[in-house]
Amino acid sequence: MMQTRATLVCFGCGSSIPDGLNIYGQYLCPDCEGKLIHTNINELDYQHWISVCRKFWETIKIDLSDED
Image 1 (cartoon, rainbow, N blue to C red):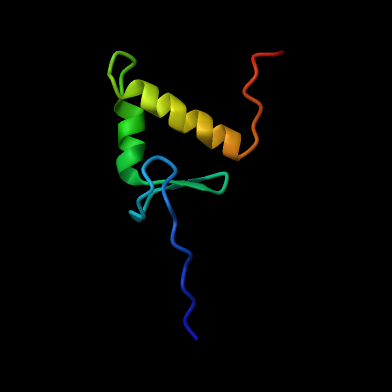
Image 2: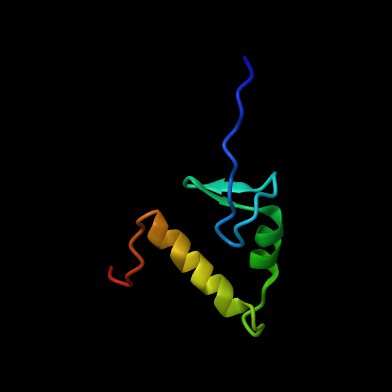
């Protein structure tokens, strides 16, 4: 009997493009990986990726506080 893999949904764009990254149970497609890596701080899209990353960390329950 053949098994099917669950469809992975990118936390950056919601697509199901294969061959992305699985990070702590969350999926990032190759397109978003490239955009995330190459977005400069002075680009309009930068704030979008900050929000996406914050949502990722909140989803996996990582503490984002600056406390030491």
